[in-house]
Length: 133
Image (cartoon, rainbow, N blue to C red; front, side):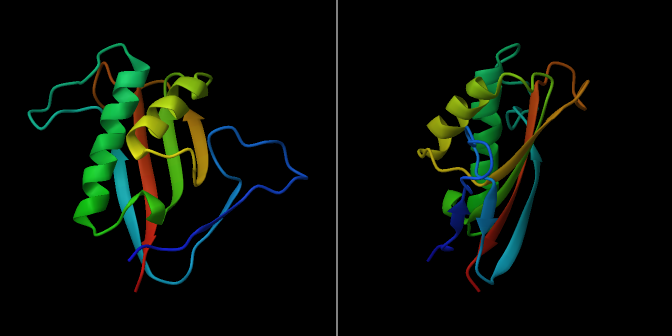
């Protein structure tokens, strides 16, 4: 059973490339996934210097965390992306869509940053999901 979220893009607001302006979720258990990065289980950076590869790796880690919580991509209601390359949203969006297997996106914010906790990382992705009660 998955959450039936509603994605809304009001026509009075600019088009939303790779995200939705509004996500409405029914009541349920809220799941907060900590920011995920492009690290392998042995703590090695995946895709050094490649924003697309690092985005895919971070999203795969998000997916593992969602599954551990009993959630899926359809339960995600909010995504925040921290990156050294915020203007490369097309690369980020394409990588996200490849991993989640969908062009539907929850509400999202991309934040430009000057660095992450580990040298060589280019992106960190955190999500909030709502699972059925």
